[in-house]
Length: 239
Image (cartoon, rainbow, N blue to C red; front, side):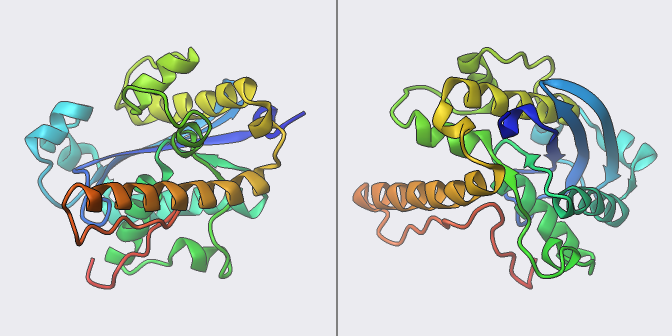
């Protein structure tokens, strides 16, 4: 049995914006999945401590009134989510997140912002791993496919149901199912162990970043820099 038949942890954040170093957590979900079926879930609603812009509300549907009235303080949510994820990593269970670089960088920024232990500190100095990112994998195994690469589009490509896009629980479950669907289509992905797949994704993401940076510079953005770090970008002290 490959990693995709074992326990996977779907993870997703809905946030106040698109810059992972600046945006704040609004909702978070962690779902245990085996064979595509959810076994249990944890969900959080945060008061992000800043106003949720109208365009973000339009995406995930969480209003400022609901977040401030029902949400837990942002530091408590970030701390709890980090504890849950690192608990799985300590036992070698893969965490699956679509575009993991965004979610894990944002979580890391929140931890730093609130003076909380980082993911690495919670793991005794180790990097968070294994992480499985269907976005990074799909972009490597089907590099030249035309069209969008957002979660909805890629779920459609692999025949994975996404019942309520931009709901953290729905997206987390879809990410885990999508990882399995990609593995079923590509035996070379299924045949890797989770730890080796994590290592390969580091390489694939770095290759993509270098290619994209080169593309931007050829298009006239001479100073363009695309960070190739995965699954977490370094978060500066000023966040």
